[in-house]
Length: 363
Image (spheres, rainbow, N blue to C red):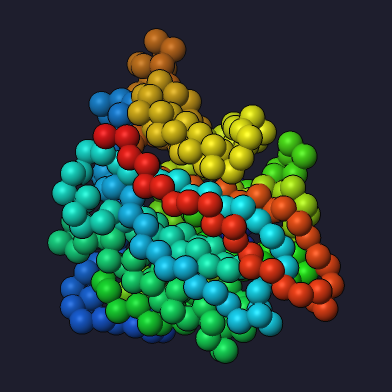
């Protein structure tokens, strides 16, 4: 996994990382909106989870905290015929929440997603806001609600970055979230805009042919859309595209999937399942099981060690190392491309054969 460092830190050799808008570094320039009372909250790193692998984990990652149960506010909308994709797909969504914070069942959790004809999106609320007395779910839920209401807006023009721009501007809740938005054009091109560490994988014939890369200021502190005046905006989104082919499988998820499941495991699970419903459920369950296994050498723990976080030297002498990830929210969307039509003159078809929606909780 490639991670970006904050531009305020220099890489070895005095080099500075690329990929951040110059506007981002001007702390005097207002960005986004300053909602009521938001000035009282200092910028906070993204608290994610307590790490179960060692007693010393809290010393390595003092900003980490446990996350709540996944929530999925959703509204299905049908785009006008001139915007609908001609690619017919099957979609499966599966969510596994963190079971330790039962109160979050009532509050709704921190993850949210949106599904429409030709558009899929997820948002992961930043749990560090809970320390400020703010429900982290409110921002991600409102953000996805705005994505839903604005997806047909003429100014969006079927552009995922424009959709993020307008949805963020319309969000008044205090908080922040990472997000990824994907829009499928009628010619089979999937356009993607992501801010932070939510991600997408495209699997074709047993290989990953496309994947997004996480954006981070430093380890475990991703880029995020926020209510604060100084934060990331749509200008910081990484915009990419990929041409989909028949029988491609698209896997979209929050960091709860990619922190716990290796790409090779995603390929194996998708290839062994008969349909997208089984694949989504199997991926969610695998990620959940890995997150509860303190001995599992996860993608997250491997990245942590590569960033210099590990057990004390005396434990290394005993052959021990930092492992595990911790239990966290999980949101998985699996999409199978069934047919592709390259010509716009062909009558359009509704993008999604929305099989069913399951809130799958292992308590």
